[in-house]
Amino acid sequence: MDNPTQRMDEAPARFDTANRLFLRLYQASNLLHKTGTRAVSAYGATTQQWAVLGALARPVAHDRGLTVKELIAFLMVSRQNLTAVLDRLETAGLVERIRAPGADGRLRHVRLTAEGTRVWGEMLGSIRRYYASALEGFSTEECVQLFQLLDRLRGSLARMAEPEGE
Amino acid sequence: MDNPTQRMDEAPARFDTANRLFLRLYQASNLLHKTGTRAVSAYGATTQQWAVLGALARPVAHDRGLTVKELIAFLMVSRQNLTAVLDRLETAGLVERIRAPGADGRLRHVRLTAEGTRVWGEMLGSIRRYYASALEGFSTEECVQLFQLLDRLRGSLARMAEPEGE
DNA sequence: GGTTATCCATCAATGCATTGCCATATCGCT
DNA sequence: AGCGATATGGCAATGCATTGATGGATAACC
Image 1 (cartoon, rainbow over the protein chains, first blue to last red):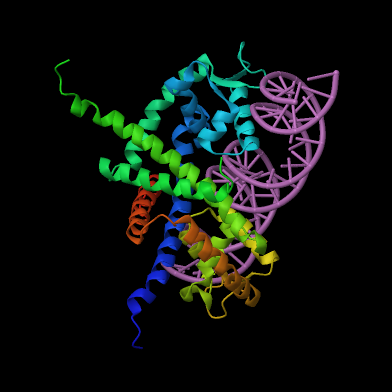
Image 2: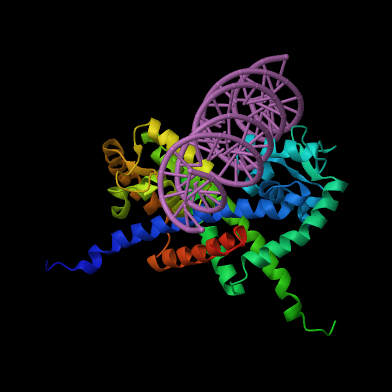
């Protein structure tokens, strides 16, 4: 009873915090998909499709598009998963897979179609409203802080997913 | 060119931060399931089953169990989803659905079986190692900070999911 | 006793996400 | 020309997660 409990309690407290932290991550992610999909459902889209369209709409990617490999790296999902999402987006006419003329023949560049660019423009309003609503009680500093912490956690988990260095 | 750009740039910066923030949330969640399931795959479990077992293993819940409704509130998932997870856990013999003798006849209490308690005890080692590895670069203060920010975000998203008060 | 509400389960559909394996086309190197 | 690596696609299986609709058993109220 005379041992210092201050250090003894450190590990259990950290475990407990980790437990709560990952439960919140799990819950927040589920809610993100649930509410996010609802926010863009008027366009027949989902949060994943929103993420893909958002990646392709960036100035860097809009003209030349992104290869499947680059999209996988950007979103950090499996190739088989991305293929299915791209199939749905292609069927909807929002995205096209093209072979760049002069480039590597193996590469397929995924690009927004004119329709895809138009729909993305319409979706932007809903997305802005969604972000504003979801982060209503957050100061800009807190947003940055949360981003940075999530960024580090993502990095840590990515390291666990791929032990061998790239 | 003489208008104060400081305020004009606030909204775009916030939008950009939100964009990155939710992408990180999306990525971190996918990696959580990927690496987490790998961590407990030796027990034939997944992260969701881990979450359910963890909820039921808490001292508060271990003896009397939790009703399906309580589990839904704790994990914040849909009833149909939870039913499927519970079915798999019941088939694996880790969980049992019982009707409490004196209580409301509509309620089903979900409880860990003896086997479930044993397996959870074994899983705890892997889980502790997982938490330690995932949060390796984080100070205890940062863990708490991330938890609190995620908790607020979860609350905000939950409000968006259920507009009418409970 | 009858109505209404709650708790739980079921069936069905869609989409996301992973793993594993196989196939094809192209590139780069020898 | 051949060989290995890379980039993509296809197929299959499993599990998670949502929505929607239906139904049954129990409780609470009138």
